Length: 244
Image (cartoon, rainbow, N blue to C red):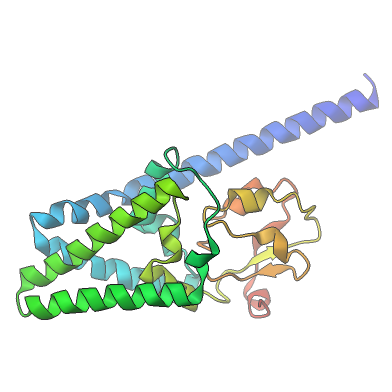
């Protein structure tokens, strides 16, 4: 057998091994998401019959921000019921187009926070002090925003809503410097990581600076899994502090 033949066989085996690793990673991530998406249906549907379920949103809100303080926006990967639902059920229905920059702009995101918190506040004001009425206010907001997210997910991309989600936005503000991604010189700019990112971030654009510390990174590890050169990893704490 010639050296060239051996090289081709080795390359094929390496490629097959990488494909198996990616498939296993995807399976595990979807399995985790399969545990949490039920929470969305529980509140968005069950809340209309039992409004007290609406108070579960407070736990989600606290979880999103609380975890971001220590571990970045990782709540939004699989712990968020709505994010899990969008990934699992909209992937095949979505056009998967590029998310417009409009949804990423700071003013857009702040405006959405202002509108939704105002609407929620007004509903709570009129429901006060009714415990059930306040719970229903949370259910209404969740139902409306989830419906909008589904429409955006199908017409644009499954995770479009995640860029304007109020709690996701607030979590992103606390995520800087938390589990940043390190990109080594082994990167060949194949952009596989960019295409795989569920949030449509672009890790490869940060190759020169060596670290990507985007607050909207949900720490899912997909980019790490698909990198054929193993050039991406989560940076240690010392490196995170130097990220920009």
